[in-house]
Image (cartoon, rainbow, N blue to C red; front, side, top):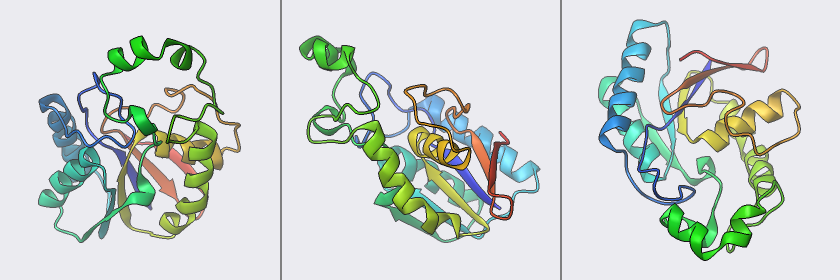
Length: 185
């Protein structure tokens, strides 16, 4: 099995994407609760792969303290690149760019970033490498996990971020034999 976990809560006043903000207190609590789930259930992994974005790295390092296995950080597991808006106060970005933010769809390219469709294509290109890593835990972002669900279920992408229940510190199990994925925590 391969397990995907979304990082814990970060400061949502900022646009995420490739921003490097860390977890807030509640986010660390969420990760600790997920770690308890991992300890109490038959979840086995011998390697951790993680996005190199700070909120994911911090999540991975917390898990590694409880499960002393090797950890590798990889930019291929990054969230959608929001370009010039990465790390900006969301309110400020929306006030200064109302037309851009009122018309975002799957093909809208963030200035110096990527569109949701481009992001999906990037993930589709790189995920096969990680899906071969049986017995691993992959710490990443909602967009990456959503992209995997869309691909596995052969569903056209959409702007619906909540469709697959990828909440903070949620855990999703991928079975390489059946090529199916489900939320387990």
